[in-house]
Length: 230
Image (cartoon, rainbow, N blue to C red; front, top):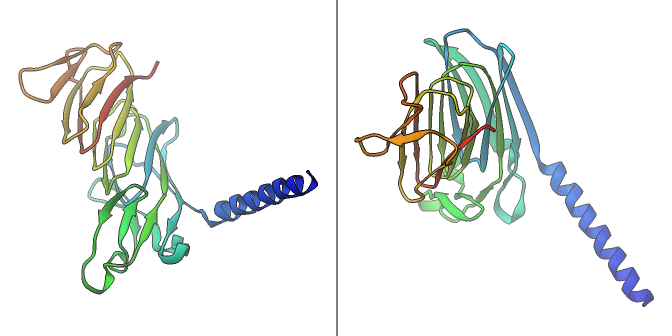
């Protein structure tokens, strides 16, 4: 019995150490910039697991990355990810990039995204990075994820474009008038019954509350889900 207790304590101790080590391996990057009224926001990301887009009552944009990249033999590769924010031609450009892609076989935990050839084809980089983007109300946003990352968006009342190989989930105010253009390669489209959405005569075009004011366009290989905020 004593041996059993010792074994349980030992296993718990090892698990706790592994958890702490895993947490320590995650690298947090944060970039903030003042929002210029009327400028669009463009977000492009390389090989991330999840992107959460939220709005807040501030005249600024904040981009936070919790970087968790694992390379060959379980070695941490978090330094291979960087964030950039620039402003040019009436647009805020936000980039999250995996550096040295040609030296890695990049894939999400359950599927392949990127397959370099030649001498690099045996390399591996496991992607577990999570992104949080905070944007002002009524700022137009375009989001592009390279790879199978999922995009989750809390709608801020403005025009919205998003594309990924993964899934897209949108939470939107039930009172908004919007034209919604949706293209899902494999996963299909799920519309909550509490939303007043009708499909127009054109394929994959939907109108929320008769449409007209706001344009929303989604492209995904996975499932596209539209939900009310409350």
